[in-house]
Length: 290
Picture 1 (tube, rainbow, N blue to C red):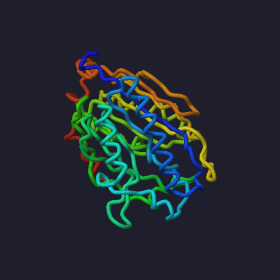
Picture 2 (cartoon, rainbow, N blue to C red):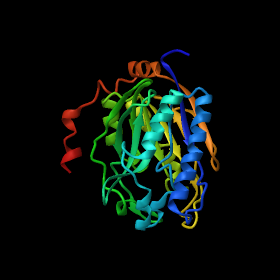
Picture 3 (cartoon, one colour):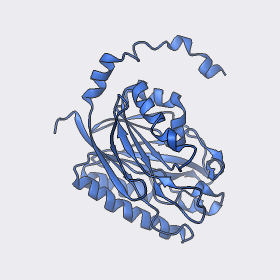
C-alpha cells in the first residue's frame, strides 16, 4: 500500500451491560468489548482508528446523576489510557480514544486521548462545545468546556485532528483544525435520530469540503435503557475532501467501518479549490467581536 494511502477505521458498539448495572461492571464490559473490536480492526489492516464518544459507558448525560462520576479517570495516567497505549504498540495502530476525564476531584472533561502506533501518548482534545438540552443531553452537569484549543497531532500515519459530537455544529473549530494542517479529522459522537439526523451527512461532509481534509464520523448504535432518549443510529462513515461518502456502517449494531484514505487527494483538491489561498481573515473580526 502506498505510504499516502492510510487504511482507517471507525468502531461503533452497542452498550453491552444494562445502564443500571454497577458502574465498574459496565466499564469493564465495554472496555473488553472494544479491545476485541480493535483487534479485529487491526486484523483488517487498519492503521488508524477512532472509538465512539465516551466509549467505556452508556451515554450517561441522558440523566443528571453524580453516580456517573465514578466512570471518570485521569488521562494519561489512568488505567484505560495505559491499556490503550499498550494495545496500540502491540497492534501498531494509531488510536483516538474518547473517555470521561477527571483532571482533579470535581473537575471533569469529555476528552479524547490520541495515541501513536508505537504506544506513545501524544496528547488529548477536550470537547469545546457542550450541549445542555432536552431530551437528555445534560453535558454541562458533568463537564467543563474544553480548554486545550484545537490541537493537531503528528502521528505515524499523518496529521490527526479531533472534534467531538456537538462540536460539529460549529464551523470555527473545524476551520482551525484545517489551518493547523489536519489531514484526517475524527468526530466521535452519540447522536440520536430525529432533529439532528439529517444533519449527520450534511455538516461533516461540508467541513471536509470547506477545509479539504478527510472526516471520520463515528456514532454509537442502539437504544439505551432506562432513559430511551432516542435511537443512536450508528451509520458511522468516512468522507473525502470533496464531501463524498467512502464507507458507511450499519445503523443498529456493532460495526467496524474501514476505508483507504489517499492523503494525496488533499493536495489535488486544494489545487482545484483554493479556499485557503482565497480566505480573507482580515474581514472576519465580527466572528469574535460578537
